[in-house]
Amino acid sequence: MVRFAAFLLFAGLLAAAPALGQTKDQTQLPQSEEAGEQPNPQAPPAAEQPPVQPPAQPPASGEDLTQPPPPDTGAESDTEETSPDDLSFGEIPDVTVIELTADIARRSIDALALVRDKYKDANLENYESWQDFVDKTEDGKHFETDIKAAGFSTVDEWNVAVTSVSFAYSALTDNLADDLETQIAEIEKDTSIAQDLKDRMIKGLKAMIPSENNKRIVQAMIDDPAYTEKLKLLAEEGE
Image (tube, rainbow, N blue to C red; front, side):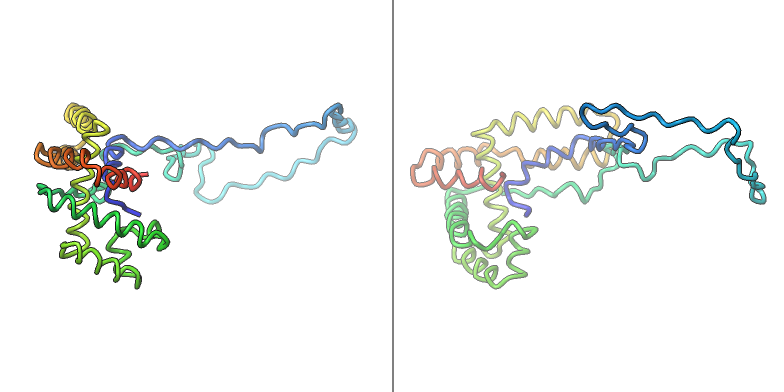
């Protein structure tokens, strides 16, 4: 499920996908022997009975056997690496955040605590997003009603608000902003990434760095015993 705190995984798209492990050809390995037993060598063929050679087949028409076979292009190989330029724009999420107010931030976390408990048996992990859950299930319709009762016009509006809280919370508790600044600097220096893709990456990462206003509001919530435990739900959503 694409959770709101899962945007924190966005930085993982910056590195090229590692090559998959190569599969060894086990058909050429010797068979293991039972413990304590010696392998029995095969007797050589009798000298008076040389192996019969099959008659040579003429080459197919137009085939030049004097030329070596074309090299394997590896098009189907699982070990092929993916360069940053091969990443699709569709793999880079659009990161939307807002400037929080204390009221919006608190309502978004109150709603999170409510729905996490109320719909804990709804198998939310089986859905691509909160909206997917709303669109496909009867429980989702009740979920949407709860979100609107919290003062949000749509599930997406609530999701943006709670995502904005999540980024600020991670910046304050996990030094997220420092990590993002490092990633941005590395991308800016990387000449192997196409400029349009680089711009898209940097834009997304910068959006994840919370404003001073958002950090101030979330810090006040961290210091408030009524929200200290509720905010920990954001870390659980990212697991």
